Length: 452
Image (cartoon, rainbow, N blue to C red; front, side, top):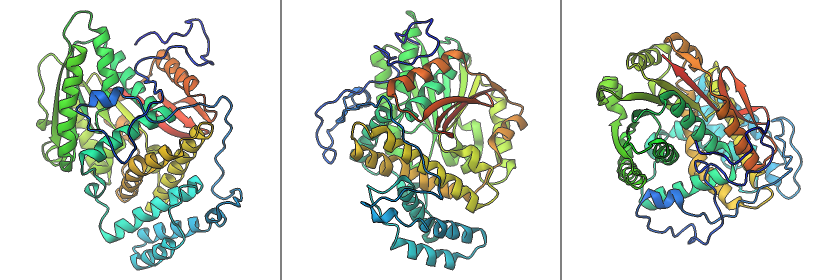
């Protein structure tokens, strides 16, 4: 990657770099149109590189601790947070799912409807509980489907992209996930000019901008080819078209070649990797996230068969990114325990967001991040808790895969990212060969690389 403009002999990057890696975008303030009236973007390149309508002032000494679930400070300006027994009620509702007492769960959630009201000024735990209450209710009503939370218009897609960029400027969480993944790919693929990435959670493809830049910089006059095959839900048609067209254009602007293909998830579930087109001579990388394991359902047989298929392809690297607190969730012995783990994770996520903007404002962006990015993930987490999968690390070992230690340079980049945002409470840790971004002691993102 490009030089980070920090002294090479610096033992710990404690100060903000003067120049930052272009793969960690800088977001200066601008004067974009209001949120409710998005501009008509013609390409993702404009969105990747646009300025955002928020001044990302950072804090030098922010000390914002997450309070234990059973001990919360009284907030005289917000009465909705004064009584926390709604958490017990929410957990009781989740417990009813384990015992199949659905009518009781419905009655509890109806009571909570009158108490858990959406309040942007509420504490993180209250806001998270509100979304979990809605997610539990949606399961009972049968509306908790992937399509129920899908983006339905280009305007909404644009707003989600802008919100993601705002998230990247406010918090280190999105960029940590992106650059640790890219670094694992670049180190393992070792400058290959013909790379095929099979991605099981491409989203809107924003993360490929930085990878393409890295590939272009390392091309040295060659004409590299990046192939991307994304396995996506069937309702992803609008996003698929947008991602393909604009990633191809973005690659063209950088002077590299790109091919982007999409495989419907149902097709993949039927024929596995036979749905993916392979080309002789390419180096293969597989990007995984918890979502594919949840989709495969409960029990280890499906997960084991899937990982066996992955191994048969002999990829150069398998990268697993857990940005959903899945390590703890998969260890849960019940739906109730899974919901509690996820509730804690997303409460911590919201707490870190509040801390990230405490010094410089930006509360409106936090609300957008919460509604557009985190709420759909909460609904998916609750649905996934019903289909408990085996612990993913055991599944990887069981399939004959072995972890690859991420490089010291990846550690260095992580420290540079934290030095850039300067938010006390975030720190980088190594656990089981994973590079982990923690908010206090809770893992927010864990990236690991595996070889077959």
